[in-house]
Image (tube, rainbow, N blue to C red; front, top):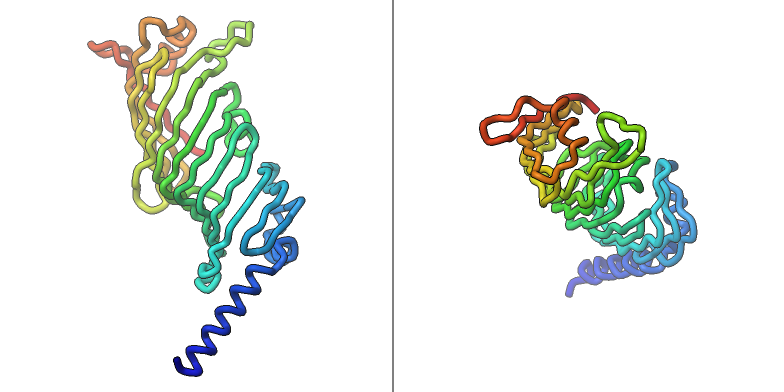
Amino acid sequence: MSRWSWLALGIGAYIAFTLATFPAGVALRWFAPPAVTFAGVAGTLWSGSAATCSVEGFTVQALRWRLRPTSLFLGRVSANVDARIPDGFVRGDVTASPSSVRLSDFTGATSLPALSGVLPLPGVRGQVSVALESLVLEDGWPAVAVGQLKLGKLESLPLIPDGRGAYVPLGDYTVTLVEAPAGELAATFVDNGGPLEVQGTAKLDKARNYSLDALVEPRADAPEMLVQGLDIMSAEPDAEGRRRLNLTGSL
C-alpha cells in the first residue's frame, strides 16, 4: 500500500472517530436552523437522541438518529430517525440539503386532530397512517410524493348544522400517491368500507391549485345527514346511483 493510501486511510479513520465522538449537543447548537429547537440532547453527532425537537410549534419526542457519515462528503446530511409524535410515531430515512428535505422508506401514524397545527382540517377527525416510498420537500412544500396514506374512522361535523354537534361517520379510505410531473402531486383514492362507496383522483399543481374528481354512492346505511350533504355538494345521481363530486381551489 502506497503512502498516499495510508494517508487517505488515516484521514478517513480520523474523520470517522471525530464523528463518532463529537457531542450531539454541540453539533446541534452549531448547525441546527434557528427555527428548530432541541431539549434533552444526548449522544454524539453520529448516534444521538433528543428528548424533544420542535419546529414551528410542532413537537416530536424521544427523537433518535443514526447518521450516515458518507453523506456529509456530498454536501448533505442523511440519517435514520425514529421519534414519537402526538398520538403516534414516525420512523424512516431523512436526507437534508440546503435546498430540500427527502423522506424515504418512511412510516408513521397519528390522529388528524394531532396534526391540526400543520394540517388544519376543522370539524374533521380520525386516524391517519402513512407509508412513503419518497417525499421531497422544497421550501417546506411537497415537490414529489410517492406512497400510500390510510384514513381510518374518519368523521366530520355535518355540513348542515343540526345544533347537536354530533359527528357524522365517513368511513375508511386509502389514498395512493402516484408519480406526477415535477412539482406536482397526484393521487387516487378509494373507500375501505363505511357509509360511502367512493373512488376518485386528486391533483395539486405547482401554483398550489387543487382539483378532486370522485364518484360517490351512499350505501344503504348512510346517515341521512350525510346524504343531505351530498345532495348539496354533488351532481344528480346517474343511472347506477353514483354522484359525481368535483372540488377545486387553492392552498
